[in-house]
Image (tube, rainbow, N blue to C red; front, side, top):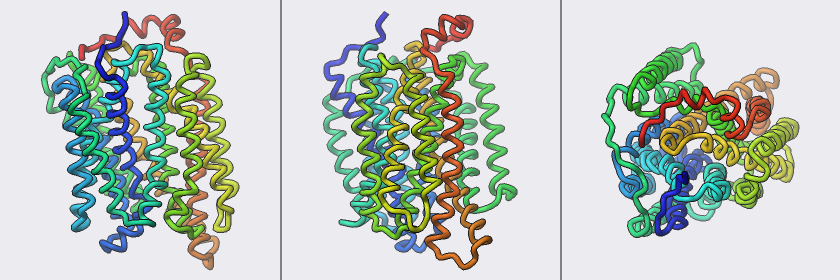
Length: 484
């Protein structure tokens, strides 16, 4: 039985959803190039300014699990148009930036809008296109998920150098206005409204769990893990997430149906996406710091150096999507993680305060060549194993962990970077600031190299969902889908 739902303008709907998600994901890293400018303008420390990125990811991680519930209470039109309007309001607040508090508030509001759009995009795209076109569609979605945060530093670098950093948000606001006008005319309702009971305990546990976890990871960049400021929210977050999981499994209509993780290829695909996002967001904050602080390049030049890697992703994503059914997820992810590992090794081997720019370009291109081969096949293979009634739950679970990965990647990368700098200063007390910064960046790439090895090992266990279903029918039978 086909899961496709007929709508008048599926391609236009796809464009609206993907561009809306692109703008939101672009916002995750768009300010990375501008943090030094913002620190100077508002007289805040690096740790405080970093919350403009981490806070954005924190809100997404808290809101996305709730989205599975929202998709059962509100229509597709209400969620998409509402998400775009909220994002527009947040972009305008951030662009006005009367003070740091208003800028932070604008980031939070924009993250709320993005948190509504991301899960809706994945769920709707699986419903409005036939399964034979799913590879191409998911290829384009993979392009959005990987290109947007990676392109953030590139585009913002050019904007900062030619205009000023608030124009990052003014341009986003204009795009949101145009999208809202098109969405009002073209977005159709495809979700099934069942209005399940709202469980406030689940929402509270989810918020405390993901909020505590990300807050602790982000704070590790400033203080030691032995500090109560780190371990207390970490412990509370872990306990809350355990209680959240127990409660979901004991509910007739859970907020997020965690039974999606009984499908082995969905679990492995989600883990693969998690590792990929971890690497993307880590490099998204490390490389701008390195290019500007160690190689002493302008924001525009730093952005242009990252452009070829983004171009590789842009060109390859649709091709990977078109070839997905022929090549399969296993081959793509194995080759992809081998390239990701090579890219990270090149960074570790070459990073210094005197590295030629072309070496950074080549390493970044190799890295994103591999990530392009990994992300879409992993996501498509994961979602393909789920029945239609679990799309919303699978989408919410996957997107939640993606945001956790983004926040964790940013926080851990900065923590390892800081540790690497301290270690280098101890060994070389007379080193220059660019040398110290480069040493910290190089140290952080050991972390992403380790993540690449884990991803490569996992890729050898990837199979087609049909093969898993045939071999492990008990897993499928044990799942009790909840009506959307």
